[in-house]
Each structure stands twice: as structure tokens, then as C-alpha cells.
Length: 283
Ligand code: AHM
Ligand code: MG
Image (tube, rainbow, N blue to C red; front, side):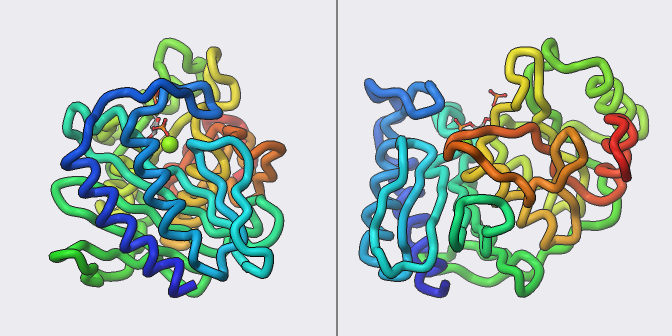
């Protein structure tokens, strides 16, 4: 696992350099979710693939930007499912973006995730890494190396509300839930990049990030293997919760296809409790 973690640190520095120096335009291709790929999506994917291809414990790679599974080492133990540059369209307007990594052992499903990591490319490069052994570990880049900042724990209740999805397409009870939080004094914090948005909630003690099922996207937008399950693990390890709209732990998801999505809610305990009430699911 250490070699995977060290490789993530190396790719973080390279991708950050690409964001700062390369063409921000679109490529001529679409990803498997039907979204136009930016040249930076393709480049970040390439950087990650090149970096992991010589790491013998990596059995296979699955990328949000590629169809199918890239087999690497038959004797490898782990499959890494990753979103090379999440929120990449925000780079053009100079907002923060991120990379997300889920490290799975065995079949690709929530309960087989053994570690997760994400990188935030913002004014500085930050990295969060979580294993089953304890709280997420927070690092910050300093001249190409990473300093350990500390362990991250969510408070029981936070102050931030990050409601994703197109509001026009929310169902009534979701709208009521979001409005009720604002009426309780919660503040809106939403950039449109799940990595910086979820990172902010984690580091500021708590709150809730939601990306519900909507009338145009009943299964939400965010992809289970690359986005939803890695962050669900991070939030649970930090002492919070992560569930779908039926109240099921996102860590219990079993994707039928690598690019399947799920409605998702990540937060501290109080806000997830409120969500369960609003959605009429068991606490
Ligand atoms: P991407 O992987 O194509 O960048 O999409 C994921 C991003 C998330 O970071 C963010 O939460 C979400 O898309 C926002 O999407 P939208 O603005 O379409 O609601
Ligand atoms: Mg993404």
C-alpha cells in the first residue's frame, strides 16, 4: 500500500504542473459517461496510468475517463479506480479541482474498498489518505514533498451546506430538506467541484454535501467506483456518515457497471440524521 500512496504523491505533483501549464481546451473525445473530455482530463489520466503501470501490487486500473478495465499485473493485489481530474471544467475559471482514488481488493464493490485518497489542486496541493486503520490523514505539498498536517475528525454537527444537482429538478422533499438547513443557520458552500466541496466540509468540522437523484438524473451524477465510494469511506473514517436516498450506506453499493452512478449524501451525524427524517428512511 505504501508504494501506491507514494505514487499518488508523485502524480499529484505532475498533474498540478499540467493544470498550471497546459492547454485548457477540449479534446475531440467523450468519456464513457458521454461528457466531452478536456485535454487536461486525458493528460491527467495518462500521467496516472504511466505512474502505476510499474507498481507490481496493482492488478488493474479503472478510470472515469476510459471504458473498461486496464489489466496490469496478474499477481497484483489491488485495483485502483480513479477520477484523474474531477471538476476539470473548473480549471478554466481558476477554481480548485481534484483527483480521486479508490483502492479495491477483489470484486469492485463498496465493501471491498480498502483505502481511498484524494488530491485537491488549489492555491496549494493537499492530499488526504484513509485506510481502515484510522482517521483520514491530511498532507500538504511543500516544494514537491508532502508534509503531514494531522488526522481529520468530523464534529457531530457542522455549519456548511453543499447542495448539488440542478435545483429545478429536485423533488419537493429534497428542496424542503435543503431549505430547512438554511433556516437553521447553515451557510451555502458550493463550488461545483466535489473534491474541494467535500474537503472544505471535512476540514471545517462538518455539514452536508448532497448530490441527489433528480428528475433528469434519477440515479444522480456522481460515479460509484471513482467518486462516491472513495469519499464515503473518507467520511466514515472521519466519524461521519455517507448514504444514498434509501438510507443505505454507500459503502454497501455494488455497481453493475464501472461507470454506474448513485444519489449520494456525505455529512456529519446530525445532518445525515436530518436527511433520513426528510427522506422518510430509518435512522
Ligand atoms: P466530472 O467528474 O465530470 O468533473 O463531474 C463531477 C463533478 C463533481 O465534482 C461535482 O460535484 C459535480 O460534477 C457537479 O456537476 P453539475 O454541475 O453538473 O451538477
Ligand atoms: Mg468526476
